[in-house]
Image (cartoon, rainbow, N blue to C red; front, side, top):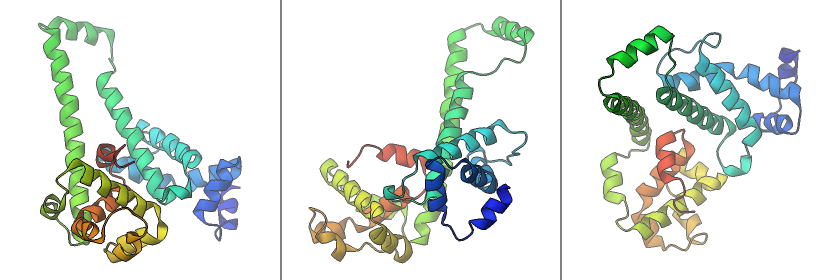
Amino acid sequence: MIRRLVNNKQDTSLDDQVASAKDGDDETRNAILKQYQPFIAKSVSEVCKRYIDPLKDDEFSIGLLAFNEAIQAYSCEKGSSFLSFARLVIKRKVIDHIRNEQKHPVVTSLDEEVYEEEQMENPSEVAAAKDRYQLDTESWYRKQEIAEFHAELKKYKLTFDDLIEASPKHRDARESAVEVARLVFQDPHLREKVLEKGRLPIKDLVDKVEVSKKTLERNRKFIIALVLIFNGDYVYLNDYLKGVGV
């Protein structure tokens, strides 16, 4: 039944299918969930850095639930494609799950718990060690994300040195640049020019923002990089920018 439903809707855009699912079409929702299981597994695997077995790994279930939540929360007016939005939701949920698991480790047996307590000469040191482990794990994820973003920048002939040099020095100027980047990202026409041509459409922007042409040109590389962040599934970089320039 699901396969037939998917085949019958080959000419229907994914956005239209998602909208139908949001409106209560459970058949379409189930069809989307089934069709995009490989996408979900791949998105989860990108976080866990290992193969994810949909039949065995709890993380896949987290990803499936997150994908379902993304269907309900998605709006094409937000600027990103549904799959980009869903990938970001999946990664956030999986990272939250990993963080929670680190904070509340599962004890496999009562004997093991007693043994561990006997070994705890200083419980505060044990707690500190767990905190360090969590910080080290998150640091590793951040490094992976930065490496991915570095590779993305190279596609647009940009480097981190370029961004450091182009980054506005004053807070007000940085917030203004973030606001411009959000505007570009949320406008499909402007976003397409940045993503496909790698250039900032300054002429189109002059009449839309309260920023001079000279300032836009000076901050061009920085704004392009921000658009790439908004368009990607960079959990930590997006968190860093959350609430800025709104």
